[in-house]
Image (tube, rainbow, N blue to C red; front, top):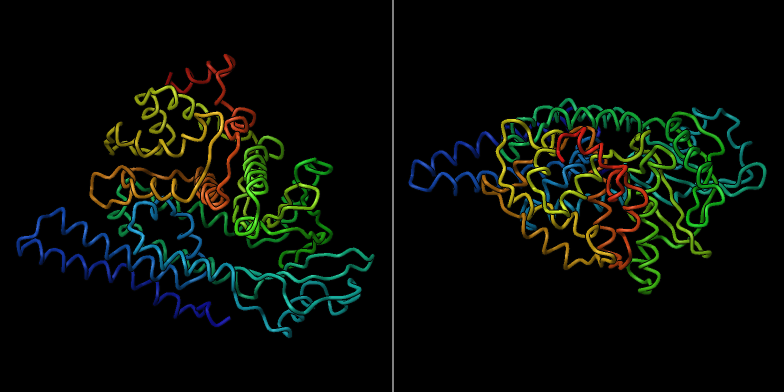
Length: 448
């Protein structure tokens, strides 16, 4: 695990370079300003150098630092690709090619977690992992009753490394305040820390996966492998074959990509209504297309608990936006905490920024594409102080919802999916339809 700097001193030293480097660049910027450059140009130069340093350091670390970087996709959208490109490449490498644990360490963890007689639980156990990620790896095995199973094993020390990062990341509040003056960084970090603590607990993950498996048992569209056994650091589930969504992206026919994208959206939108939970890690590695046309779903370590389903205001604001009432949209976003009280925002700039996110819900059928996404990203890749992206806040209760939607749009664009996404929003997102039953809630929000 050579690419995971786990010693506390090493990790602290890397993270500590962020505010110190920022202070140095601020001094340089002041010197340039005194030398005649405009304040706006100097501010933009300082922000770009600061962002470059932020993503360089976050990209070198796994753990909490990487999770923070993943959550700040709204931040990435506001930055030039030459800054975030290498960072995204590093994240992909860390996610997809994490070095496996030595076999002796795997056996040691299994003995500690399942007992010295752990092998009696299995007819066979493959020592070579089939997948490795940021906090654990998966092995294929045959359970004692003959069922093929997936055995997920957490890296020793992963929890300490993850949670230790947040102490250091708390120091970044002022730095992100310069880059994103509308962001309540303390609340974002607090929410992420809670979710990371949950992700480290495989028993909690087992309860979530079992809830999904029970609700979707026999479903014509989805298959979720059920849990067989679990404790805090080892999770045993039914094995599931299928074609990874990443292969559908690169090799699938148009028909296959359209179906995969539609099911992908349907799963994310219907789960809060059906299970009270939102799968919060929707990258292609967690999905499989099965021979019978169903979508298989894996990895329930990161879930957002939404016992009442999607927040009704989420659908209401999309509907109101589509009707063109920006004054009510701004009021609603303020009430939900997306625009902090001290921040003034240009409604026209906000409309231009939000349009791409709501656009797929305004038409009967929509095609997601890389070109469409690049056009939208280019429209906000601007670090000038007036850029609307820099004025927005990410409320703690929406951290995971935002993460899911941002990542989900990226997957749909990779799939180049064409489908009737509006139908899924109407069916599963409360408050979006024009049903008269929704109207009283608008009044309760004081945005109608």
